[in-house]
Each structure stands twice: as C-alpha cells, then as structure tokens.
Image (cartoon, rainbow over all chains, first blue to last red):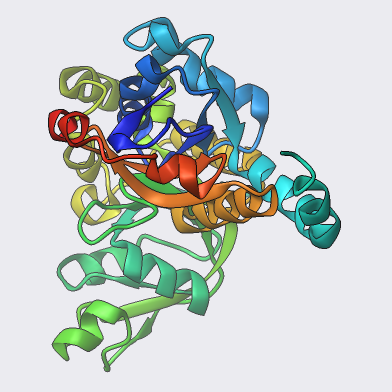
Length: 102
Length: 228
C-alpha cells in the first residue's frame, strides 16, 4: 500500500511525549490512522509504571481520540531504554538474525 | 520537646537555572523578596520547584523537584546562575545549600484533577477557572514563595513528591528516547527516519521495512502536494 509522502507506509511511527504534550502527540498519531500502519506508538516519558502510563492516556483515548483506542500502543520511556539495552547487548547477533528475512 | 514540621515553599525558575541548582546544590532567592524570605525559609524546609515555560526544553511547565534546605543563608556578591552570568548582575543576593529529595517531571495536566481536589480553596477555585490547559503558570505564581511570602500546604508538596518518587527520580529527555528508538529500529534492520515530516506534521521517529519502501518506487507528487 502506498502511503504518506509518496513512499510506502512506514511499519511503525513513534511519538515521544514531551512535557505537557500528550494531546498533541495523540493528534499527530491520529492523522496517520487512515494509513493502517502496523505500529502506532506513544512513548510516555513522565510515568515509569506502565499501568499508570495507560491510566494517564486512557481518558484521551476514551474521548477525542477514540479511533486510536485499539490502535495505539503505549510504552514508557523506561521500557524503550530496556529494550535498547537488551538488543544492544547482543547487537551483532540481532543484526545477523534480522538479515535472514527475504 | 517541640518539633516543628518543615514548611514547603513553592519556587519557580527557568530550566537553565533549575539545572544549575541541581548540579551545584544551591538555591538563590530573587532580589526583591530575598530579605523577607531568608528570614522565613529555614533549615530543613522543603522547596517545591516548578519550571516555567520561558526558555524551557524538557521540563516545560512541570514540577521538577523537591529540595531540602540544608544550610543557612549567605550573601552572594557575584553572578552565579546562568541568567546572572549572561547579564553580569547579581539577581539572587541570598543563597543557600540544598539537597535533592526527589526529582523528575510531573506536568500540570497530570495532576490537574488531584490539585483541584486538594483542600486548598484558593488553588481549587483558580484552577477550575483557568481550566485544564491554560494559565496554570500564572495561577501557580500567586502561591509561590516570591509572590505570596507563605509556604504552600503540605498536601500539595506530598502529592508532587509522591508522583516524582513514582518515577524513580529519573528524567527521560525527549532526545534520549528518540535516540533509543532509532537504535532499536536500526538494530532490527529497519530504515529509520527521525523527525519525519508528513501530512503537515513532524513525527518523532518512523521505521520502514527498507529504504526502498521509504523512498517509494516512483515519485508521487500529487499525494505529496495534497499532504502539505
């Protein structure tokens, strides 16, 4: 499927919350909803606990951004860092394995 | 023996001065109110720090730390904080050593509901009037030590302290998180673009299956035109 800005649609788009920018970040992700992108991610930076991060975003997803309710995945910044650290630890092996696909 | 509970004072500063305060463990009272406040803010008192919008980058309009006063006030006769050094003047003539009780970032919107429930009539009424999204800095300024000359209630301090503690004292900068997402995408073999612009918006990080997918097989100027 041809997507945004002339290329094919991206596999994933990440919006990182900056300060008091939750609504703006969700609004940007909402504009991409029509492209049926597999991964729409909102990374919450001001809440370390995943459950609390969900609670922080949920009122917006129940209201103005209800189309994103089942589409957007909410991660904490801490989780991003942990995934980075885990992958970086085995960087060479991960790179090798990721080149096997066609 | 009479044990006095420490007071909690709301102080507001720009992000650059906040970083200096954290890194050097000192806080300075602004000139106009310094004489009055140094007699009121005592050893052991807490300072609840709110970072103002002006010149901010990561901590805009957020509660960023609770500090504890760990010394006595002393005069400062040379520019110390970044805004003093830039102008070559002393804006904070009385300084005190502080230690960080907890730091992090709690934005106003995150605690709006709790703030309106605190038994602080003035704050509640003003917040409800200001609404969720605007004017908070101005509302809050009225309760700052500099403006009111009074400590804030312990309810406000405890609420923010608890929220900051729940973050484990960590501040994740926007740029760091974007950098990690870029690294993860590249490690997994995606074509990664930071600050990707489309649909008239700038997205933090996007991953494509390949660079070819990102570029597309042929230009699609009509779509691009419609998107801007």
